[in-house]
Amino acid sequence: MTRRYERKTGQRQQSERELTIRAEFHEPPDLDKLCELLIRLALQQSGSCRSEGATRPKRPRAAASASS
Image (cartoon, rainbow, N blue to C red; front, side, top):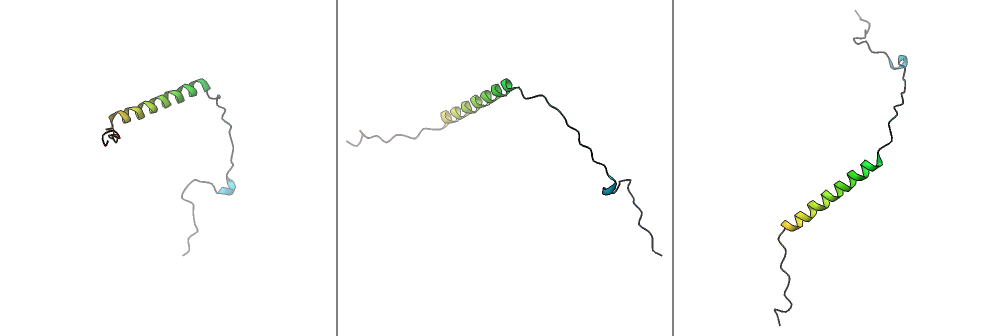
């Protein structure tokens, strides 16, 4: 009693498929806004680097005049 294979899904075989491609057109990027964002991020990052340096304890300098 050999049963014939039956598909259990409604999917088509690859040879039966049709592919279509649609182009999506986007507006060009707003360079003014991108530049402003880049400047803000750079300033924010440089500000956080400066604040890190201010919170770190400074290493004492070697006193050259103290040994004489």
